[in-house]
Every structure is written in C-alpha cells, then in structure tokens.
Length: 77
Image (cartoon, rainbow, N blue to C red):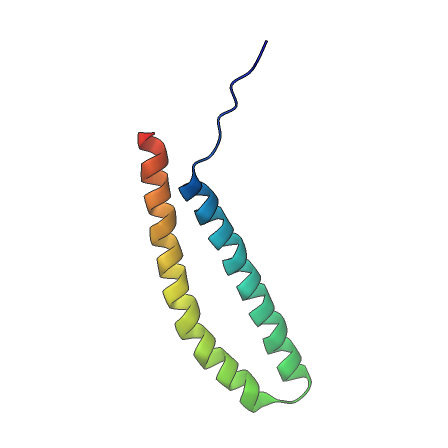
C-alpha cells in the first residue's frame, strides 16, 4: 500500500527558511551585543542596538506578511 505524502508548497518552505534565518540573526545579534558589553565596548553596543532595531522591525514585518500569505495560500490549497 502506497501512502500519499502531503508535501509542503514552495512558499511554505520559503517562509519557514526565512523564519529560521531571522531567528538565527536575532540570536547572533544577541551574542554580539552581550560580548561587546562584556568586553567594555559600549559604543559598539549602542551602535549595534540602534541599527538592529530598525533592521529587525522591517524584517519582522516582512516575515509576518510572508507567513500570513503562506497561511492563506495553504488554507486555500
């Protein structure tokens, strides 16, 4: 008996891959921020924080729209 495997669409794979790399980016930023504070480079930490807030906000909003589109497309499929 051959079972039919329900495969995810390319859009779902793209959204999940972007979500994975978004969380890896956040983790890497957190590590860099903690290390720069622990080594006494407060100026670098302030620069990292100010630049990352703008980047994370835009990327998070884009990722949210991609996930919402994926949910709608997968539910219609």
